Length: 95
Figure: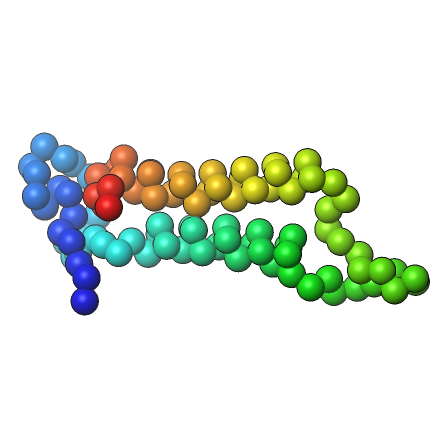
């Protein structure tokens, strides 16, 4: 339903490393990287705990917010760097 030509098909000054001749949007790499980072953060930090201790308290993966913040920064970096690399390689447009 939605497809855009790849940037190198519109402008001969753009030379991709290796790329197919099919339409480039929506990008499977970009959507998969965003989905994986969102699912991992939500599952690890906001999902139901699998085990409880002897007192019935849930065992959580993190004990303080520093681990959460660092993991969130890594997830955001993962979700942004993959689409940006596809743009820099000239195989997808910025949209």
